[in-house]
Amino acid sequence: MNCEAFLNDPDTSLIAPAQDESKGVEFTFDGSWRTCRIWEGYFRASQILLEAALQEPQEARGLIFPALFNLRHAIEVALKWHIQYAGGLVPRRAGHDLGVLLTAFRETAHDLDDETSYVSDFALACISELASVDPQSITFRYSSEPDGRPIKIAPRCWDLGRLYCSADALSLWFDGLSGQIDLSRDDHYQAYLRS
Image (cartoon, rainbow, N blue to C red; front, side, top):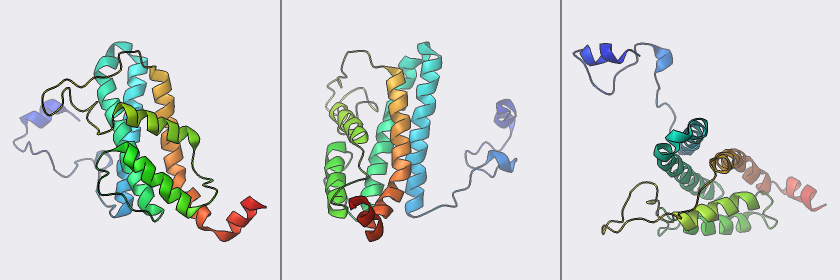
């Protein structure tokens, strides 16, 4: 896109049909699959930002906040979607609290499958760690609490490579989780696991 031509165009509206269809996006998906596109997109955005920070270390200070916000938001939306997909209820008090969502996810998984064979200890540990750092989804979104107090972040160095690999692993786990939930409902598959 030629930004100079756009700025000189009398029609500078933000939302307009794409002049080149390959450069446009249509919102043709809805319902629960819209939510999937949302959390998948937030995971991907996090990965892109973390990868850019790894390639250009001087950019890391500016990119880390949106990268971690996107990662955290992806996890939140994915947990809510999978709780509902598995037949559970997202607690009203959950809001943005990953700890509450993680508890609801564990309860839903336990109710669905005695063996909870699709629950990844690695994924739960990553989510728990992020929940302890940013329970209400404000740490990487704002610099201060609503009352003006600064939001503190652990002052130690965070390994960008570990963050990138964790974001990638969590994205892959969530991508396959609905299939695992479907299998956990299948009595023949459960019998096979127990044999």
